Each structure stands twice: as C-alpha cells, then as structure tokens.
Image (cartoon, rainbow, N blue to C red; front, top):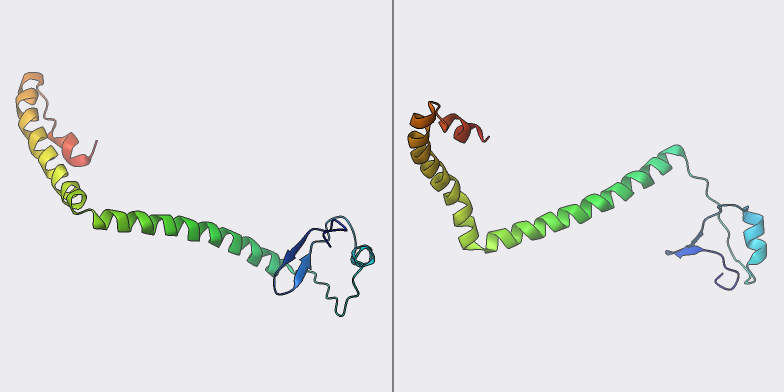
Length: 117
C-alpha cells in the first residue's frame, strides 16, 4: 500500500480512508492478493462517537497535566503552607493600612479586601 501511495492506518486491521475514490479503485491499486475485504459506512451515531472520543483524548491530556501539577503542588510543603498563610497575612496588613488610609480619604477599604476586588 505504501508503494501505491495509499494512506492507511494499521490497527489490528488495515483501515483505508476512501476520500476521493471508491473501494473498487483502491482494491485495484493493491497488488497483494486479499483474503478478506470489509467495507464500512459509518452511521451518524458512529460519527458522533468518533468526535466525542476525539474530545475525550483532549480531556485526558488536560486531566493528566492537571494531575501532574496537583502532585507537584502536594509534594512542595512550603508552597502549601504559604498558599494558606499568605491570604491571612495580606488581609491583616491591608486592614492595618486601610485603617490609616481610610481615615485620610474618608472611605473604608476593608470592603474591597473581603469582596476580593
């Protein structure tokens, strides 16, 4: 099939896509005697299933990277501690500074701290 320049996928069976030719033209170009030829016309459900499985491979890749990053995060103890301690330190410093700055401006900035703005 390579000599005839026929693109194929080698799974347990050989799969040949019939893009612009019919099955008879492809069989004629193959020089090796064939013992079995199956033609397959996918249904609409099969086409949707292939599209879904293509998306699942993307999901599997994304979930693998997320899992790797989560493992990396869980193994780094100082990073875990700092990610939980830093927000409280930031809130404490912000409350202290906003008490002084709020009295100068006449507005309390504590509301921005707790709403995440």
